[in-house]
Amino acid sequence: MTKTIAQRELRNDKARVIDAVAARSYGQIVAAVAELGRSHRTRITDLLIAATAHANRLRLYTRNPLDFGGLGGLIEMIVI
Picture (cartoon, rainbow, N blue to C red):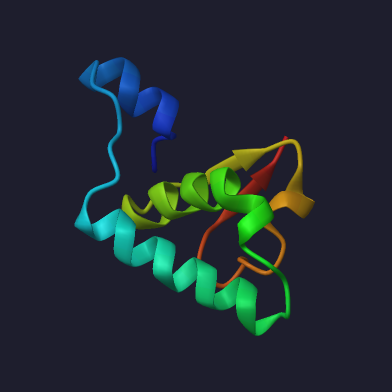
């Protein structure tokens, strides 16, 4: 079973950082958003969250699925 970021953080007790893998994921996610004709500039925080989930192969749990629109092919999103 894939663990959420929160579950991993509780176990690791370390903050997530944007490493090279997450930075590459961010580039892929920004490209996906741009392909849809949307701006990434107003969504930087949401896209960094998505990039962290993508880089670590984690599910992204959200109450606001529209914040991550167009990323279904890159991340597994669970709406709560």
